Length: 103
Image 1 (cartoon, rainbow, N blue to C red):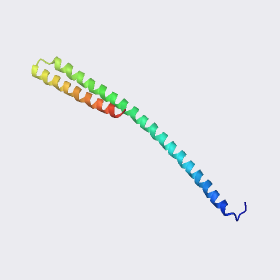
Image 2: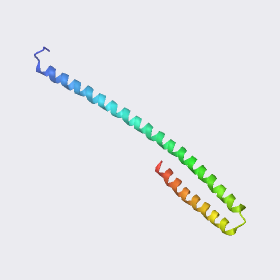
Image 3: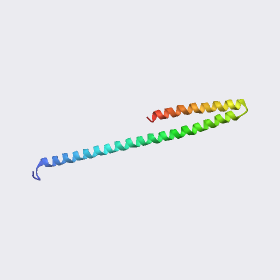
Image 4: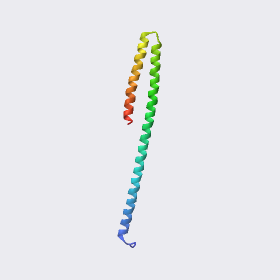
């Protein structure tokens, strides 16, 4: 092949294009892997947050139930018990829905 060979430029261009394509595919693969790791980390953090939220709400419900049992007034006890049940039901629904989304 000589410098005047018209095929040489075409071959070089094809080789450069192949290298660029390979580099692009490798970059895309690295980005996909990074995204997958990020998503898994976010799901794990979300589950930890949900567990903490669930525990704190359960502590609040337990406190309300103890307060309801300690009062001498039936109407206060009834309201506190109803509120504790409401909080527990709503939080269970919320946590269940959030966990389903994190799957």
